[in-house]
Amino acid sequence: MPQLTALPDPIARDLADFSIEVPSWGYGNSGTRFKVFTTPGTPRDPYEKIADAAQTHAFTGSAPRVSLHYPWDRVEDFGTLADYAREQGVEIGMINSNTFQDDTYKFGSLTHGDKAVRRQAIDHHLECIDVMRATGSKELKIWLADGTNYAGQDSIRERQDRLAESLSEVYGGLADDERLVLEYKFFEPAFYHTDVPDWGTSLLHCLALGEKAMVVLDTGHHAPGTNIEFIVAQLLRQQRLGAFDFNSRNYADDDLIVGAADPFQLVRILFEIVQQDAHRPESGVNFMLDQCHNLESKIQGQIRSVMNVQEALAKALLVDREALADAQRRNDVLEANGILMDAFWTDVRPALATFREERGLPADPFAAFRASGYEEKVAAERVGGDQMGWGA
Ligand code: PSV
Ligand code: MN
Ligand code: MN
Image (cartoon, rainbow, N blue to C red):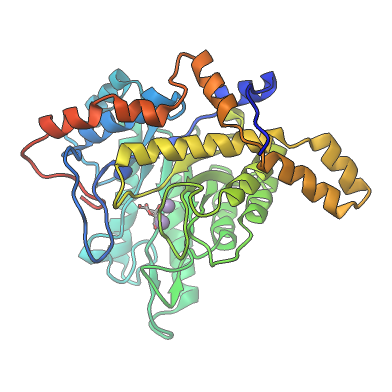
């Protein structure tokens, strides 16, 4: 595999400007429906989650924001939490709403047939906007578990109408500099139909709402074989790609470390991104991780993912776009494909190590964090109290 030892200047500049947002819930315990394994030192409150997330940034220099999930991350005073985050060197990112854990929402939230339940779900989202204002966040992220399990269980059409009405009330609560991002997922927990199953449905609702509504693409939320990079290109073309939830999947919503199952897919996605300059901060696309670490160390898992995204981005930026355009003009199918593959097969790790050292960061953030003693320290300190889990 050809090795690159230094990044060309424009690529280094792009990487320096590129940032990744991490999820607070990625630092808590998580598992499957069979078992949640605990780890010594797992955070006991949102403050400790932020402290752990700040480690990911300290070692990679590229993960300066932490998404909160509300009310999993509930504190007395969100302003104090935001101040604490800044002291730790990070900012609060998106606020994720949660209407999937209360009994009230058993048959839906923003889509529910009962107006009182819809009211509660709308009010929850308006409360999330208050949390945004208290923390300095500008983005509300909505993922709905709404759907049905059996044909005939409810009217698909009426649920769409109720969803549109509820979303427009939430949207009305946004200030001019705030925005809403709507995530889709093709199944789970609902198994017959999901109310926002795909990018088309999310986009239609966003278009109806207005310019402050954008689509969120979670890489684990598609049927096997879906061409995700096509969706990326299409949403960017419509200027409606608001955010990513990056993770890796073999089967369904596996939430594994980014790029684990298919590093080539990650490069293909990021190649669509760089072709439309969407990796630049001005594009407004928020590159977030949405992962859960069931077996592996959580901070190490997040660091590995950040590094994987950076490697894939460097490869995408390395593609010789002029040569590619020329091959495409000549319809030289194999040469065009070969140009993309050359970038994919380049080992950019030595170049990224140099890039990091030049910025005063460890050449290998993963190894440096493992050797730092942080995990041992928090395992000794964080005794007593309940560890937080996905959903805690
Ligand atoms: C749903 O599967 C999802 O991807 C949404 O983003 C949730 O908020 C998140 O998982 C929780 O991990
Ligand atoms: Mn997600
Ligand atoms: Mn998911």
